Image (cartoon, rainbow, N blue to C red):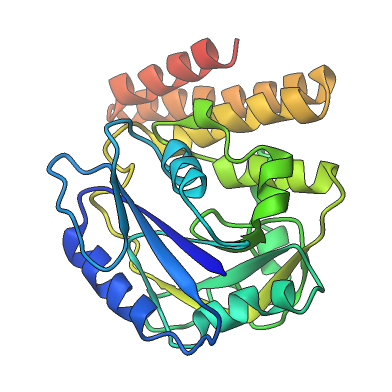
Length: 277
Protein backbone atom coordinates (compact mmCIF):
# COMPACT_ATOMS: atom_id res chain seq x y z
CA UNK A 1 0.00 0.00 0.00
CA UNK A 2 1.11 3.58 -0.74
CA UNK A 3 0.53 6.50 1.63
CA UNK A 4 0.54 9.94 -0.02
CA UNK A 5 1.26 12.63 2.57
CA UNK A 6 0.49 16.28 1.81
CA UNK A 7 1.27 19.03 4.34
CA UNK A 8 -0.74 22.19 3.65
CA UNK A 9 -0.98 25.71 5.03
CA UNK A 10 -3.21 28.53 3.75
CA UNK A 11 -3.43 27.17 0.19
CA UNK A 12 -6.90 25.59 -0.09
CA UNK A 13 -7.31 26.30 -3.81
CA UNK A 14 -3.93 24.75 -4.69
CA UNK A 15 -4.59 21.78 -2.43
CA UNK A 16 -7.89 21.10 -4.19
CA UNK A 17 -6.16 20.97 -7.59
CA UNK A 18 -3.46 18.63 -6.29
CA UNK A 19 -6.02 16.28 -4.75
CA UNK A 20 -7.81 16.10 -8.11
CA UNK A 21 -4.50 15.09 -9.70
CA UNK A 22 -3.94 12.44 -7.02
CA UNK A 23 -7.37 10.92 -7.64
CA UNK A 24 -6.56 10.65 -11.36
CA UNK A 25 -3.44 8.51 -10.89
CA UNK A 26 -3.11 5.37 -12.99
CA UNK A 27 -1.27 3.38 -10.29
CA UNK A 28 -2.78 -0.06 -9.69
CA UNK A 29 -1.70 -0.43 -6.05
CA UNK A 30 -4.03 0.69 -3.28
CA UNK A 31 -3.19 4.09 -1.85
CA UNK A 32 -4.37 6.43 0.85
CA UNK A 33 -4.10 10.22 1.03
CA UNK A 34 -3.20 12.00 4.28
CA UNK A 35 -3.59 15.79 4.46
CA UNK A 36 -1.96 17.53 7.43
CA UNK A 37 -3.44 21.03 7.63
CA UNK A 38 -1.59 23.81 9.47
CA UNK A 39 -3.71 26.63 8.04
CA UNK A 40 -4.71 29.65 10.09
CA UNK A 41 -8.31 28.75 9.27
CA UNK A 42 -8.40 24.98 8.62
CA UNK A 43 -10.76 23.79 5.90
CA UNK A 44 -11.37 20.02 6.20
CA UNK A 45 -11.37 18.05 2.96
CA UNK A 46 -13.20 14.82 2.22
CA UNK A 47 -11.93 11.61 0.67
CA UNK A 48 -8.72 11.48 2.71
CA UNK A 49 -7.37 11.21 6.21
CA UNK A 50 -7.54 14.81 7.36
CA UNK A 51 -5.45 16.03 10.30
CA UNK A 52 -5.53 19.58 11.67
CA UNK A 53 -2.28 20.59 13.35
CA UNK A 54 -1.61 23.80 15.27
CA UNK A 55 2.19 23.52 15.23
CA UNK A 56 3.86 25.15 12.22
CA UNK A 57 6.48 23.64 9.94
CA UNK A 58 6.89 21.00 7.23
CA UNK A 59 8.94 18.65 9.40
CA UNK A 60 6.38 18.08 12.14
CA UNK A 61 3.67 18.02 9.49
CA UNK A 62 5.33 15.21 7.51
CA UNK A 63 6.26 13.28 10.63
CA UNK A 64 2.65 13.53 11.85
CA UNK A 65 1.43 12.24 8.51
CA UNK A 66 3.76 9.26 8.72
CA UNK A 67 2.57 8.39 12.22
CA UNK A 68 -0.93 8.06 10.79
CA UNK A 69 0.11 6.23 7.62
CA UNK A 70 -0.77 2.62 6.87
CA UNK A 71 1.31 2.21 3.73
CA UNK A 72 4.61 0.40 3.16
CA UNK A 73 5.68 3.18 0.77
CA UNK A 74 5.47 6.87 1.62
CA UNK A 75 5.07 9.60 -1.00
CA UNK A 76 5.55 13.24 0.05
CA UNK A 77 4.07 16.11 -1.95
CA UNK A 78 3.85 19.85 -1.35
CA UNK A 79 0.44 21.49 -1.57
CA UNK A 80 1.37 23.87 -4.44
CA UNK A 81 2.31 21.04 -6.80
CA UNK A 82 0.57 19.53 -9.82
CA UNK A 83 1.27 16.00 -11.04
CA UNK A 84 0.49 14.03 -14.19
CA UNK A 85 -1.45 10.77 -14.04
CA UNK A 86 1.73 8.63 -14.11
CA UNK A 87 3.53 10.41 -11.26
CA UNK A 88 2.80 8.00 -8.39
CA UNK A 89 3.56 5.01 -10.61
CA UNK A 90 6.88 6.53 -11.70
CA UNK A 91 8.10 7.76 -8.31
CA UNK A 92 7.28 4.49 -6.55
CA UNK A 93 8.33 2.21 -9.43
CA UNK A 94 11.98 1.65 -8.42
CA UNK A 95 10.87 0.94 -4.84
CA UNK A 96 8.14 -1.49 -5.88
CA UNK A 97 10.68 -3.25 -8.12
CA UNK A 98 13.04 -3.67 -5.16
CA UNK A 99 15.79 -1.63 -6.84
CA UNK A 100 16.02 1.38 -4.50
CA UNK A 101 14.62 2.28 -1.08
CA UNK A 102 14.14 5.99 -1.88
CA UNK A 103 13.30 7.92 -5.05
CA UNK A 104 13.48 11.58 -5.96
CA UNK A 105 11.26 13.06 -8.64
CA UNK A 106 11.98 15.89 -11.07
CA UNK A 107 10.78 19.32 -9.94
CA UNK A 108 9.77 21.22 -13.08
CA UNK A 109 8.26 24.60 -13.86
CA UNK A 110 4.44 24.91 -14.15
CA UNK A 111 4.66 24.03 -17.87
CA UNK A 112 6.61 20.85 -17.19
CA UNK A 113 10.04 22.08 -18.33
CA UNK A 114 13.09 20.76 -16.50
CA UNK A 115 14.88 23.38 -14.39
CA UNK A 116 18.48 22.28 -15.08
CA UNK A 117 20.81 21.13 -17.80
CA UNK A 118 22.74 17.91 -17.14
CA UNK A 119 25.07 18.26 -14.11
CA UNK A 120 24.52 22.05 -14.06
CA UNK A 121 23.07 21.85 -10.59
CA UNK A 122 26.50 20.83 -9.25
CA UNK A 123 28.32 23.79 -10.82
CA UNK A 124 26.41 26.62 -9.18
CA UNK A 125 28.67 29.12 -7.44
CA UNK A 126 28.03 29.12 -3.70
CA UNK A 127 29.90 29.36 -0.41
CA UNK A 128 27.48 26.76 1.00
CA UNK A 129 28.67 23.38 -0.26
CA UNK A 130 25.76 21.54 1.40
CA UNK A 131 23.25 23.60 -0.57
CA UNK A 132 24.98 22.68 -3.84
CA UNK A 133 25.92 19.06 -3.19
CA UNK A 134 22.46 18.13 -1.92
CA UNK A 135 20.46 19.85 -4.67
CA UNK A 136 17.98 17.82 -6.70
CA UNK A 137 19.20 17.19 -10.31
CA UNK A 138 15.95 18.37 -11.98
CA UNK A 139 17.07 17.47 -15.50
CA UNK A 140 15.94 14.93 -18.07
CA UNK A 141 18.19 11.93 -17.31
CA UNK A 142 17.61 9.49 -14.45
CA UNK A 143 20.58 8.66 -12.20
CA UNK A 144 21.83 7.95 -8.70
CA UNK A 145 21.60 11.09 -6.58
CA UNK A 146 22.50 12.27 -3.09
CA UNK A 147 19.28 14.18 -2.48
CA UNK A 148 15.57 13.72 -1.95
CA UNK A 149 13.43 16.88 -2.07
CA UNK A 150 10.92 16.86 0.78
CA UNK A 151 7.96 17.71 -1.43
CA UNK A 152 8.76 15.34 -4.30
CA UNK A 153 9.93 11.98 -3.00
CA UNK A 154 9.00 8.38 -2.21
CA UNK A 155 10.56 6.11 0.39
CA UNK A 156 10.01 2.81 2.14
CA UNK A 157 8.38 3.47 5.49
CA UNK A 158 10.80 1.06 7.15
CA UNK A 159 13.74 3.14 5.87
CA UNK A 160 12.09 6.39 6.96
CA UNK A 161 11.66 4.93 10.45
CA UNK A 162 15.27 3.75 10.53
CA UNK A 163 16.77 7.17 9.78
CA UNK A 164 14.37 8.92 12.16
CA UNK A 165 12.21 11.12 9.96
CA UNK A 166 12.59 14.87 9.43
CA UNK A 167 14.42 17.05 11.95
CA UNK A 168 11.69 19.02 13.72
CA UNK A 169 14.07 21.57 15.23
CA UNK A 170 14.33 22.97 11.67
CA UNK A 171 10.73 24.16 11.92
CA UNK A 172 8.91 26.49 11.48
CA UNK A 173 10.68 27.30 8.18
CA UNK A 174 11.92 23.75 7.74
CA UNK A 175 14.64 25.13 5.46
CA UNK A 176 17.10 22.40 4.48
CA UNK A 177 15.19 19.62 6.24
CA UNK A 178 15.28 17.40 3.14
CA UNK A 179 19.04 17.92 2.80
CA UNK A 180 19.56 16.77 6.39
CA UNK A 181 17.27 13.80 5.72
CA UNK A 182 19.37 12.96 2.64
CA UNK A 183 22.57 12.98 4.71
CA UNK A 184 21.00 10.52 7.14
CA UNK A 185 20.05 8.23 4.26
CA UNK A 186 23.64 8.34 2.98
CA UNK A 187 25.12 7.67 6.43
CA UNK A 188 22.84 4.65 6.82
CA UNK A 189 23.96 3.30 3.45
CA UNK A 190 20.72 3.82 1.53
CA UNK A 191 20.95 4.70 -2.16
CA UNK A 192 18.62 7.27 -3.76
CA UNK A 193 17.40 7.09 -7.36
CA UNK A 194 16.45 10.22 -9.28
CA UNK A 195 13.64 9.37 -11.71
CA UNK A 196 13.42 12.09 -14.37
CA UNK A 197 10.08 10.66 -15.55
CA UNK A 198 8.39 11.45 -12.22
CA UNK A 199 7.72 15.09 -13.10
CA UNK A 200 6.23 17.43 -10.52
CA UNK A 201 4.99 20.82 -11.74
CA UNK A 202 5.81 23.37 -9.05
CA UNK A 203 3.74 26.54 -8.82
CA UNK A 204 6.32 28.30 -6.56
CA UNK A 205 3.53 30.03 -4.67
CA UNK A 206 4.62 33.30 -3.08
CA UNK A 207 2.14 32.92 -0.21
CA UNK A 208 1.17 30.17 2.19
CA UNK A 209 3.29 27.24 3.30
CA UNK A 210 6.25 28.45 5.36
CA UNK A 211 6.81 31.62 3.33
CA UNK A 212 5.65 33.92 6.13
CA UNK A 213 7.26 32.28 9.16
CA UNK A 214 10.84 33.54 8.68
CA UNK A 215 13.62 33.91 6.14
CA UNK A 216 14.11 30.55 4.43
CA UNK A 217 17.35 31.79 2.85
CA UNK A 218 18.85 32.73 6.21
CA UNK A 219 17.63 29.58 7.93
CA UNK A 220 18.95 27.35 5.14
CA UNK A 221 22.41 28.79 5.84
CA UNK A 222 21.96 28.34 9.59
CA UNK A 223 20.64 24.80 9.24
CA UNK A 224 23.47 23.95 6.84
CA UNK A 225 25.91 24.92 9.60
CA UNK A 226 23.97 22.83 12.12
CA UNK A 227 23.92 19.74 9.91
CA UNK A 228 27.59 20.17 9.01
CA UNK A 229 28.43 20.29 12.70
CA UNK A 230 26.18 17.30 13.43
CA UNK A 231 27.10 15.02 10.54
CA UNK A 232 30.62 16.04 9.47
CA UNK A 233 33.14 17.84 11.70
CA UNK A 234 33.64 20.92 13.86
CA UNK A 235 36.45 22.09 11.56
CA UNK A 236 34.35 21.86 8.41
CA UNK A 237 31.40 23.51 10.17
CA UNK A 238 33.64 26.37 11.32
CA UNK A 239 34.90 26.89 7.77
CA UNK A 240 31.36 26.92 6.44
CA UNK A 241 30.27 29.38 9.14
CA UNK A 242 33.08 31.77 8.23
CA UNK A 243 32.21 31.65 4.54
CA UNK A 244 28.50 32.25 5.18
CA UNK A 245 29.08 35.13 7.61
CA UNK A 246 31.50 36.78 5.18
CA UNK A 247 28.72 36.79 2.58
CA UNK A 248 26.30 38.49 4.96
CA UNK A 249 28.98 41.01 5.99
CA UNK A 250 29.71 41.85 2.35
CA UNK A 251 25.99 42.27 1.77
CA UNK A 252 25.82 44.77 4.62
CA UNK A 253 28.77 46.83 3.40
CA UNK A 254 27.41 46.83 -0.15
CA UNK A 255 24.07 48.10 1.17
CA UNK A 256 25.90 50.75 3.18
CA UNK A 257 27.62 52.00 0.04
CA UNK A 258 24.34 52.14 -1.86
CA UNK A 259 22.38 53.71 1.02
CA UNK A 260 19.62 51.12 0.71
CA UNK A 261 18.43 48.15 2.82
CA UNK A 262 21.16 48.95 5.35
CA UNK A 263 19.14 47.98 8.42
CA UNK A 264 17.83 44.79 6.79
CA UNK A 265 21.27 43.61 5.70
CA UNK A 266 22.78 44.40 9.09
CA UNK A 267 20.00 42.53 10.89
CA UNK A 268 20.51 39.45 8.69
CA UNK A 269 24.25 39.49 9.37
CA UNK A 270 23.76 39.77 13.13
CA UNK A 271 21.02 37.14 13.19
CA UNK A 272 23.23 34.71 11.28
CA UNK A 273 26.06 35.30 13.76
CA UNK A 274 23.75 34.70 16.71
CA UNK A 275 22.16 31.53 15.34
CA UNK A 276 25.49 29.97 14.32
CA UNK A 277 27.23 30.48 17.66
